[in-house]
Length: 380
Ligand code: AMP
Image (cartoon, rainbow, N blue to C red; front, side):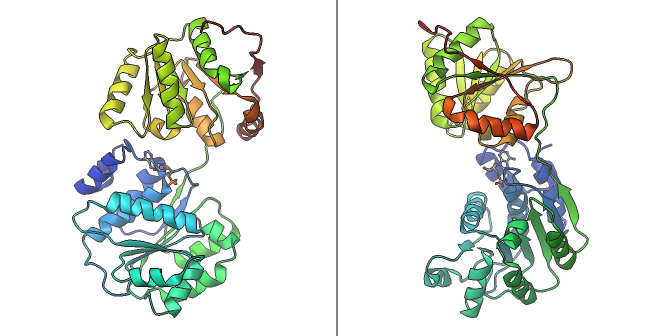
């Protein structure tokens, strides 16, 4: 499925392409058309699912046909539990909104910093991203008015409730028009979240994105205990030993990805990197070659790898562990489909042993860790 088929306009599609998102994530696929159609939405999804763009993109599109906000009356309100999330959402709003025909003005406000600069910048804000306490302070200072809000987004609603914002949220609800569109995102659905949904949402479309932590049986998983300094030579040893011809290697940073590729090329092994610092042209080129079997090793970061659509790969190597068990499952899920068993290999440095235990526990599967210290890597 493409972003264009979700009903997004050409300028937004261009902005999405500039972000190098190649296809919508499952929550985006379901949420974007529903939000564009004016429906209320309950999104049960975690961070990492792409939930931010799932509401930011339709929000920006809906704003295109609305008049610019005037004075203190904001048009759309996003309530969040933390300052970090507020800043993150603001970045996404600005990132996608910067080149649209109708300029969208957004602002993030949160506590812990002086209120005056926030008050001064509020005039003419279309989308306000706020933590509940600071929003109420600003309302008390007469700096914001909620009576014109057409869309309310409650992001990480479970976290807001856990942090004890219920009373502040209730006060805010009392100031909002009853006739509005409401979207609620939450990683978990407790009784309290259910009550919030029942009281604030009208016949919501529900989208549930479960965390994928189960691994297909067909994948043969192996782990090797390798010190960080020996990972490069050990990778070359494995490529040779097992005669691997099409390998996707995962690194956790752009720097490592570039280093691994540099060393492989120096040793005469065809390799390319796929990460956010590469141009779209370079990425496409690497992918096409890799898919066609003309590039032996592709080294990718997790983010860049989201768009890789390869049906079956014989080998996936985790050069470094991903942060989340979910990313581990995503990575190794690229091998071992249908009737063809694939192999997923993970390098575990001594300092990562504990984290690897957590990953195994989450996916409910134990992986044997093979020692490599007796393997002679000289000359590799
Ligand atoms: P979120 O769950 O909103 O925090 O998003 C998690 C990460 O996924 C962010 O770094 C986004 O930039 C990235 N992301 C969101 N949607 C897509 C997509 N369709 N394709 C690739 N990356 C995406």
